[in-house]
Length: 274
Image (cartoon, rainbow, N blue to C red; front, side, top):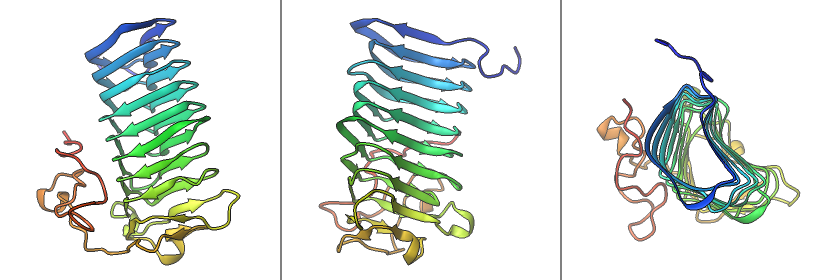
């Protein structure tokens, strides 16, 4: 077809396949219902581009699944991850989805060095059952939507950049949230709506240190408070402001110091827009 639609075909599926030799590398998959579906299988995915799928990658009922360096474009859902043990997503980009990652009931999940870009629903929705759950060195950019929703277990949200009007919503756990940079440059009038919102049962947990700019005092920490070393400076200098690269949210100069900088730590531009 000259202009194929989503779900033109079903996609590639791994079912009940436990083998260290299961590896997919250097593929382009487009216009599928589920680009790659993994059910009760061990696999390594790397250097794969998925375009215009309903769900780019689905991983369920599996163990020790590693996803590295994938790019999803214009897929309704970037990844659906459920009922797994020790899933890890690294160095990946999800651009122009409704939701980048929907993750539930996993025993261990780590999302590291990845980019959630231009989502219209939510960047990541996480409702994990247990294990180590961490979100580290990630970039979230959207002019309209919530970046990270935590509905279950979570230990750590660290060294990330959030440029969304709604940054983090926490409904249960009290994770460590530190060394992050929050801003609302892409939001309407550059005004954030809710930065860190806590909806759990505990009384005003403390989060930080982080830097929050572009949010009013009453919207920066909702039902929670800032750790004493947290800041609200607007003087942080980003590479994108000089280079013109839309998603280069790396720091031009380390903040707050050279020895322990906040925000994303990447060697290259997170994502080059075509």
